[in-house]
Length: 259
Image (cartoon, rainbow, N blue to C red; front, side, top):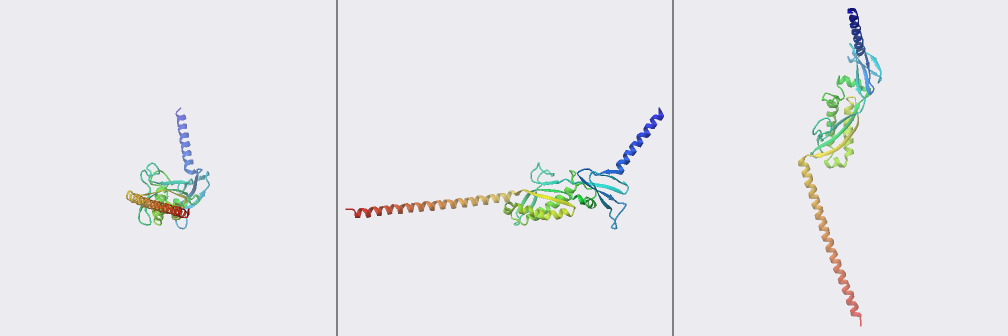
């Protein structure tokens, strides 16, 4: 009986060792991911490891001492920075603060759609080794790279527009952000798909001043309307008086000529 237990124990150990070896030496690139084999044992002339793209869904034999497989999801990622408390990764006001061309503070609600370049996963690994795209914390590519880069692009573009132009030329503003953001993300081997400008907001003081200006303009328009109305009424009275005078003159002429 003791020999049976020993045999079973050895068999279980060998099975676990084999399973461990398989998981250590064989790696699979999961569907929906782009993967590269990073070989530190066959370094290049610059001292960097060699990179070899791996097909999605494939299995790769790996030497765990000198090699590793890096995978990144190729699906589109979403970065939302808005003032709404319940939306976006950061709770609370996460809108992008900037100043328009005249120096007025503005808050911009923006959403950036981005993804990793599947052909440059290895290059991204070399500059940000071991950093995931998104993991729900601040230690990911979305936070460390995309967030700061996008906020800078929005703030820079904001300075070329007045507050009124931000509303009337919203698409031009979005295009200006894209022109700055696309090459900035490309330096990190990331692709920018779209920038959505959701809303603009002023600070309380600026909004109060804008409301006061709107009220003043409305009052001025109302005054113009009343003045025009009084002028029209006066002209109508004058025309009516002229009509009555002409009627009296015609009656007098007829009376004078009548026997």
